[in-house]
Image (cartoon, rainbow, N blue to C red; front, side, top):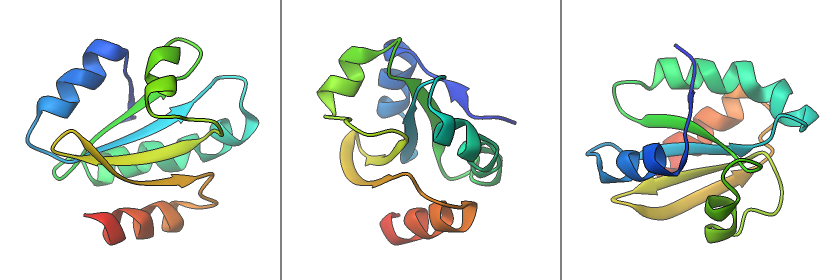
Length: 105
């Protein structure tokens, strides 16, 4: 299972759910985003029971990117109860993403 691409409506629906949310803000032209994409998809599968995981294309959803002051991509953000609790910019590996999740859940 890969991480779903979320528009504003899907993002808002995820925020209303019971699970913490992990979002990758990305763009298709971002080489580094494409490089960590497979790792992010594995994270989505691995944490499906404990996290809602999705991707927001900043070109398509610039309002969301602006709302959360996303200036560098990829930026991963964890939300709990609809509130932003942590973010990491350009994690270099799946292990780094897993560590980020463990530290913030």
